[in-house]
Length: 544
Image (cartoon, rainbow, N blue to C red; front, side, top):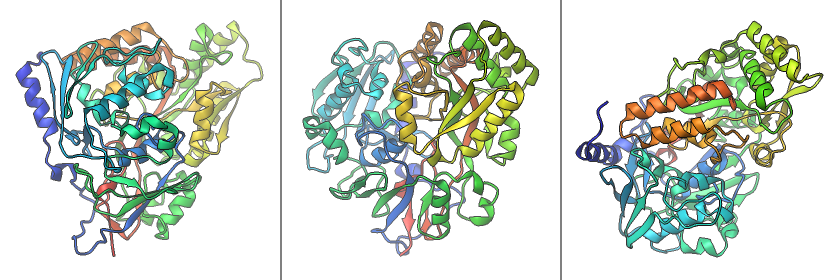
């Protein structure tokens, strides 16, 4: 692709960011439409969720349980349509300079938070500075590492943020990044009111946002039980609710959630249990979906564990990968609702590929696995140790984890078994605290629709989700080069070269890509699942 001129970039930007509201809210072809007279605008939609690990603030909701809720409470500069295209939300315009190092952002006037405070440039600047500040210790801090002034070694303001007036500010980056606006729809970039900084912990329990929904009351978050939201009548963006609210029921069993949808006690379920994969078409012939999503499943193996670093660790990681029969598991366990991985991204994003150098390590090869394991034992004998895979029981992972462990056990002749945690938040706590005794299920649901997001946030040195301690300067350099490119083809080429380094190092062992496999009850309509597998909640209607 040719280098992009300023005019071409501006044209592309305008085209991307001026999608009509009808385009953003388009329904899928298998969804029944309901007239405004036949549904209840005050009806509350019920759906599944998981207990958030952190308080419900934009800067702390970086895991799926919290992000799914926080995205409904807060509106950022842009949002995404169902296909992952950016749509202006709180922003009136977002414009880059010639080399995409300085971005001018103008906000829409008249927006307020649910406490009546006006949304201004300060609402964004203060939130971003708080998130990026080292001493606050927030996992989302690295999302702002491309903005001038960011530091991962000392407290520092983001000097690249400059207020022009109440509705305009500029963002100066450390280096060119033509893809910068794509990240701005992620919840970590949303604004917060000034009251948040008086007591962030309390604010996170009772968040005050500017999004399509707001908390239903002081007791709206009943921990480990439910989170109740109601429609925000003052929201002025493109996600205008067609219902009265959302209640997230915090299930610990997907089988229970599935049964509740079957009996009309739950409206929408965004993940079906393994036990229902072969029966879902019969159970919900007109109320189910199975489509590609930006979800990647892997197992990560911490470098702090004995046997899993250095030359020995490199051999063992490859041996484990060769020992997993992905195709058989996808067929027998998932009824082909997954696709065996060939890279570290997803078929739902540009740059996905089946032809990376070194991708043969993702195919089942018993002889190669045994050969590599033997070589590792010559360095340090694994002995009678057990290979564990930690997983969260509330996510329906037991069946496939057992299958992966059996594949490893039967191929390598070692002990392998699952290590269940009751909830996702419980498993993540031990992962964050470096307390795992083995590998861990490490799926990635993209924050924004970009190959860069899959790679940078998981494997770059010190990134927000680089939780197993991986670091390779060559990988980091290629990510930087790709991000700075003004040609999407050049960027993807660099990112794919970076993936080839990952295939050599295997900080995570790719397994498969996950489809959206959701169902909904008979009383709801206009159910559409987005590019990231999350339902477009604001569109859903419910019969009177």
